[in-house]
Image 1 (cartoon, one colour):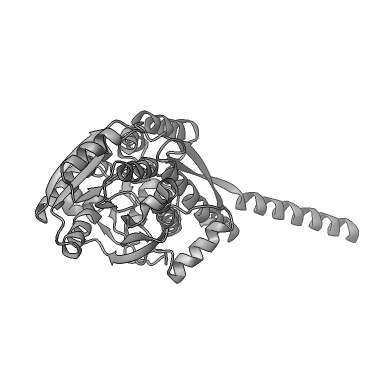
Image 2 (cartoon, rainbow, N blue to C red):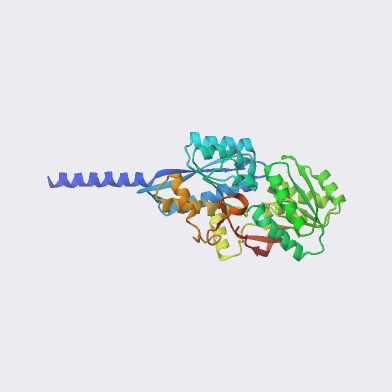
Length: 390
């Protein structure tokens, strides 16, 4: 009898242990959307890899403890092809097929705006990007949509003010942007900021998919432009513009007040990128930056896009909101997200929500940003800036 009882105890112990392990492995799908093909691929990979690093970190620590359960987050990543139709398709699949309750990304405004009707109706917590003001100031009045990186509205005016003070002899700016929601938003904000700092402005647009920018750049050169701004152009397009601008004999300053892609532009333009100035979203030379770089390269090789830490940061904020809410109910997680104001995750410093004055809601995450210059084939930090909370 003693042996039978001991055997029963062992069986029960195994059953309870197995049940505990199954509970620890309960899956929590995290939707990811970004351009994994075309000119915006570097940004799509930044979203995918940033989220994945945060997921790996959580799972290595034993999972995400929420509401008496232990979840194992898993990324379901879809390619929006940097288009509105691609974003809508991705949203419908994630919400209706994958039954995802939390989505991070994408980068492109047309894609985000196309996704909003789907995510809003389903009450999916949507941590997005996109420079168009309609991303937050939208007709759907979505209480579930938050923007997790700075936009032209946040970094454009202070960067152009810095340019004016640092290079007072520059008088005329040229901007070439895509003829879509992202490009139009960039032209509007940047044009106004340049004019406010005394610049004359020349601007043109192009259709997505264009690879030959020589005619546009030749026209720009003929206008006597002192500084050429790549605006919010994708890494692939930006690299080609720098290379082709130098090829047509444009010798003045080139910089980018928009999506960071300095290493990618160097890889395309080579030595022609020397002296290029740009926005960058992260400083990898700091102790925290070097730590992130080691973590990234333990999993992937090659270039780290400057936005990767921002998406790692976004996923960490989401996971912390889930812990605070102690539930996967998106309304309660949303409320917890807003109450993380001041929490320091280390990557960028304390969480700061802004945007009320510009978008009508405090759903804009404000992050520090940097102006960098290419010297000797590497980027050197020129200035760190902090967006103004409005």
